[in-house]
Structures are given as structure tokens and as C-alpha cells.
Image (cartoon, rainbow, N blue to C red):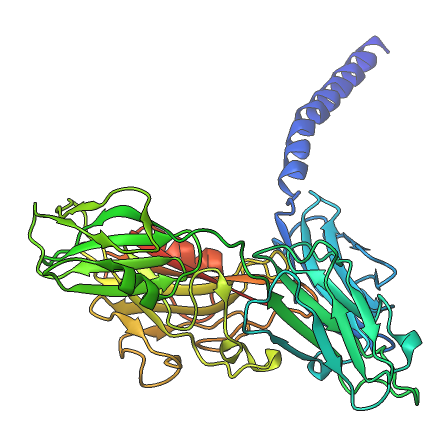
Length: 475
């Protein structure tokens, strides 16, 4: 019996040691099989729905595809406007909402901006008032039939700040015949230099209870504060040719003709160029290095600093710049360059550049939307532009005007070439950035559809410099 007990004890010891030795290996295999979530994306980042219309289903993709926990949770920033359940977005009332999907593992998120309207987006008349308006601007709206006074209220006629989306305190007044609506400004006036949007919704009714054919939305800009026309000589920018260039700025908007009339230089020809309402470049033709020239400033202008202009040669070339004849930086992009769905012609923006860095062999261009709801939506991407090219004419995308070696990539709409601005209605002003990169290689290997991140990564290792142009658009 003792002998048998001894054998049984040895057997149990071996079994226990065996299991003890296996446990770490089993635990290690289990840990290796857990794949963490890295990100989540949605099949669309923008939705436009109609009150009483159909719901839309958002599809979330958890990455990597073999992540262990694929569970997600849905939420709406404004359930009173749009609800969401398992990705199904249901319109409730007019307004805006942001739908967010969040992964259970890691809390990764993706969003979709939702606009709910009473009418389809393309049933709205909208535009931009071309002239700057005074601080006390009074709007006059004429109707072809009498308006029901009770339908004119702060929900049907209002003005919003384009900066923060808040309504301002206007006073709408109907004429005695109820055919003319006068919209008086806030008591303190509109803020100088700011942009606003005037809304006249189709909640305005005629005396016969008929609604407006189409609601109206107009963006307008207020004149900046008036200041004295002080001229500032900002300094010297050199040119590879024997030409002296000086940048001149004024403290208030000034015409090129006014500046030309007030600033002269004896016995020398001046060539002027206006880059924006307050910035001008004067070129002294035939200037020699080291020579000084005294610009004569006539009545009405005063010099703030630096009258004598000394032509010098710098070690670096002129700044690498990107410009457009269609708009200046941070100004509104004209409607004709917008996409079809935003009332435009979807023709590419005219661009020109100068001051390429030395050893530039090719250029790469990208245009994308910086608004949070757009998530760097790519509108145009072009690579392998020859260094000898200095412009892309208006409407050149997809035509023979594009240099033969250029490669136009697919934009975020899924089409090749240029796709104009088309922000979701009600999402406010969108800023569109065009970046032009000077590269030290003749070509880069990019094709098909690219994201802004993929594009930046592809050019990052060969960049010599970059130039940018920004513009804004809304609908």
C-alpha cells in the first residue's frame, strides 16, 4: 500500500507541474489574439434630409477589420432635430445635428453633419451681396402680393452672424399695404468688417395663406472702420532681375488709381500691382543695386515709415506665392467655381504662381475643405506639374489646357479632377485651402483617389517649399 501511494503521489506531482507550466503559454496566446481598435469611419460625413422625409442609414467601419471588439454606440447632438438608432438617422425638425459613432473599444469616433430642412436644398434662393454695406444698412424686400403680418416674426425673418451663427437684433417692419418689408439694423448697427446672412424663410405667408415659392438667403459684408490713408513702406523684396520692388500698404481700402496718383518718383518709371484692397507693389524699373530712390508722397498721404528705398540683393529669391485672379486670400470664392449642387458651374479656379525655390523639378497641388464637418474633404489634387508651368487657367481641369505630364487624381466626390465647393446647407462658412508644393523630383507615384493625409505624406519627403491660397464659401 505504501508503494502504491508513493507512485500515486509522483503521478499527481507530474500532472500539477505540467499544468502549472502550461498556464503562462495559454495566457500568452490569449493576449496575442486580442486586436485593438485603431479608428472608425462613416460611409458619408454629410447628410441633407427633409422633415417628414425618408430616413438614411449610416454605415460604420471599424478598423482594422479584424479588431476583436467591433461594437459601436450612436448619439445625436440634437435629438430634437435628428435621432439615430443603430446608424439609422431619422429627421425630426428643421435644423442641424451632428451624428457621432463611438467604438466601445478605445472610444474612437467619427461624425456626420446632418442638415434637416423643410424644403429640398435646391429649392432655396441664395447669393452674396456684392457691395460692402454700411453699418446702418436697411434692407427693403418687396412682395408681389400682401403679406400676412402674423407670419413675419423672428423665426421667418432674421439675420445671423456668419462668425458664430447667432441672430442679431433686427427690426422688421411691414408697409401699410403689407407688400414691402423693411428690415432695420440693430440699434448699435452691424459690426464693421463682419459678415452676416439674411434669411427670409418660406414661413412668410401671403394674405391668402400661400407660402413663398422659395426661401431666400443672402450673405452680406459690412464696411470696415474708416481710417486715415496712411502709407507704410514695408521694406524691400529683391528680384533676380535688376529691378527694385517695394510693398506699400494703406490702413484702409484704397484704389490702385488713388495710390498711383499720390506716389511718384522723379525720372523713373513705376510699375504698380494691387494684390488686395490695402496692399500694392511698386516696381522701380531699371534700378541698380545700392542706389537709393526717394518716393514722393503727395497731398492726402503721409508716410508712416521709410521714405528712402535702397535696392539690395538678398540671398534668397522672391517669396514663393500662389494667387488667383478670381479672389484674394480669405475672400469669397465666386459661385461659378462651386459644384453643380451648390448652384455653380464646377469649373476649376484660375491659379498662378511665382518665386519657385531653386532646384524645383515639379509641382503638386491640392485643394481641400478645412471645416470640421468636411474632415479635409479633397476637392482637387494634381501632381507632376512641370516646373516650367506658371499657371493653370480657369476651367483647365479635365481639358487640354492642363499640361500633358500632369496627373489629376480622384477627389473625395469620387470623380477625377476638380470638384467645386458644395458645403452642407446651414453648416456656416467653409474655408478652402489650396496648397502648391515645389518638389525636387520630376514626378511622384500617386494615382486614383487620395485623402489629404495621403497626399501630404507622398510629397513630404521631396518638398522644397510651399505656397497657399485660402478662400471661403457657404450655402
